[in-house]
Length: 331
Image: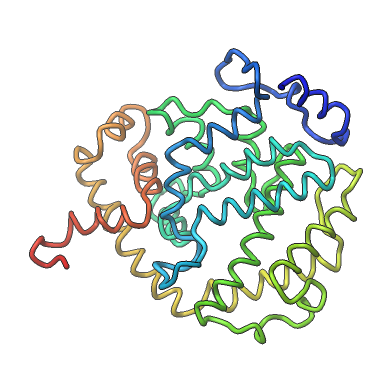
């Protein structure tokens, strides 16, 4: 089975793709799996890890929305994986590597979405970004400090998926582009569902280029990447589609992400996370045992970010309530 996969990679992948038998390896050497390639093993390890399961209860954009159909950080991750694999298949990149990076790209994300990230970045004197934290999750925090011991290509793609970073592999670049394609389109859907915007508010020129529905727009974006990048050492959209995509992203920042209602909700999350950060900073002995042990190796701010960023929304609210809300006040 593994030999067949390696033969397929050698025969059909683009010369610019990353082949499994050319990996730079892991932090700790391991005996190869007889059935799976290294990138397939990485994908499986990510799916089975605790941080991946916690994504189901982490905010994508909207806090505690009323309704069953809003995206969570987990459904966002699955969408990124689907789009990234479609791109990789179209231009003959390594789908297994792409999938592993996509499934792991947000493992270090905070509760309450990017609001939580901004709050921890302000509280930690050393700064905080979810992409770097995702690398820390897979290299160290999972498995009680042993990490997942992933290949360097997967870790590089995870850390560098954020816009403005430069992954070393085309598969990593495919995930970076797919991340933007995914959140632009599903955040538009959720913003319309939540009443923040209407379809008529969307930039008309961008909609004319890309399409009226999420499905049409995603198809336009992926097909543009195929036309622009197939057989080349890049993963990019054509100019017209790239400009339309950027216009939709700018619209979201202007009308959704920076909306007053959204920012008012963020202030509530800020008070909660700030209170937890201050509480455990003053009482590190009350941290769970794993994080108390971490303090022997890492500075306190790093450990506090490890603990708080790993919380789901519900766990953060529960912990805040247990510490700061008197029992007879709780509903």
